Image (cartoon, rainbow over all chains, first blue to last red; front, side, top):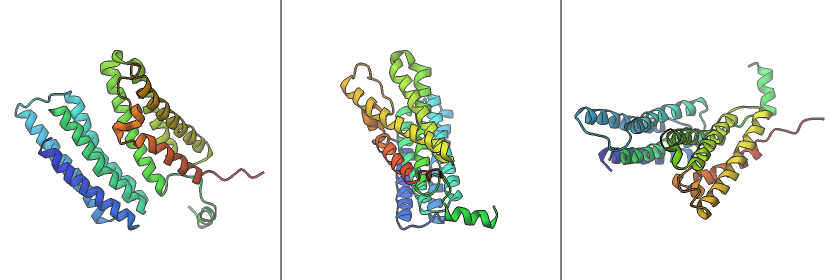
Amino acid sequence: MDAYFYIILGVGLLSTIICVVAGILKKAPNDVTILSVAAVELALLVYLVGSIVRVIAGERIAGEAWEFWGYLVTALLLPLAAVYWSILERTRWSNFVLAAVGVTALVMAARMNQIWY
Amino acid sequence: MTATSSEHTAKKPADTRNTGPGRLLIAVYAVFAISATARAGYQILTKFSEAPLAYVLSAFAALVYVVATVSLAKAGRTWFKVSVIAVLVELIGVLVVGALSIFDAVQFPHETVWSLFGRGYAFIPLILPVLGLIWLYRRRPAPLEA
């Protein structure tokens, strides 16, 4: 597991905890929960830029390259979809939807790491 | 929407399942629909001959998740029935494939979403249909008036 994974692990878990707590406290999605999901998106963008730089620098992906990029692009779309889905109906349940982004992102980052090495 | 119709819906809840907890359920189903479809597509395109039965099951599971996601998001009696069927098929699928993957490891050596009762996915495939049925029961359409 590389630094990219650990960044997403940290940011993803933090975002999930923030959103679950907000959901338990019966809050609707607010700046804090949405920004925590935005932080997950940012961490994934860092992974994307870092990976592009590494490939250009000549590093080779050990597994299937298109599988790696498929995971990364899908992971990048998830926070956007979750925020869209959660602001359509602003109830506590939408915070649980946002909470799902962090854990999903970290599982996908783990898989991306496996494919890369 | 006019004032009278919103009053009407306030008295008698609309026949929908895409609000409140249902939104979380649909979100999780959507993630499974995407991941199962991607995984089945990948397995069938790259290594179908290794384990045709397992990979056809993968594709079938993906289809069930897609149907469940779409039908849960839709309002009305017909979509309710589609949801019940999809979620029941999912429950039976995860139980049967889960059991077969333990007792007949020769036929099911390759991973599907439902192998070992969804262990590879934190057993969410086993929990999800149960929660789905509970939610569908709680939001079942009102009986037809005679």
